Every structure is written in C-alpha cells, then in structure tokens.
Length: 115
Image (cartoon, rainbow, N blue to C red; front, side):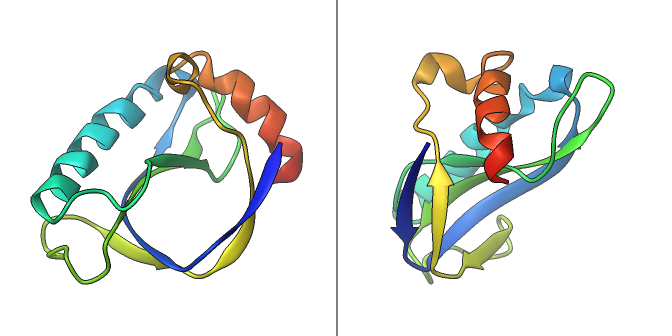
C-alpha cells in the first residue's frame, strides 16, 4: 500500500451498486468517461476506481469510476462531475491485467483494511 497527497481535482464520475459479477461495468464506464474527457481537452490524469464498500457475489457494493479532467472544461450536462477536495490517500497501483474482474477483487481485499 502506498500513500500520497492529492491536490483538489475535478473528476468525471459514474457510480453504481454492483455485485462481483457486474464489475465489468467499470470498463464500460471508463470508456464512456474517457470519451467525454477526450471531447473536453483530454484526461488530466489516470482513471481510478473507488470501492466505497465491499463487493461480493451476493452483496452489491458502491463502486465509482473516475477520470480526472481540467476544471471548467467539461459541460456538466454531458456527464456527472464532482470536485474532490485535497486529501491524503492510500492506494494500490494496479497493472492493466489486474484492473478487470475477477482479479480486481484481490486488490480490494488488500485495500479493505485501509478503508
């Protein structure tokens, strides 16, 4: 687990309650948000996924996909936008092959104690 200071940032966001078998939605959301970011000056950083709660096969959890964008460049009628305040976060860098289900769940298991 690593930590870093994150400055305030604007992110495009999609959030859902999903079960483990529905986590493929994160790839679809990433593609949609990436396309919106591309139309508005491009991403301002790498996409990230926030697991707000545990996700299981029979237990839907809250999962959020985010793509940082340049503040003020996105038409808020095209996608949900929120501003994250500056904060310190614990994170795990995830290789491309581990970002998609079911491998992402091993990452979640490591990160859960820090939630």
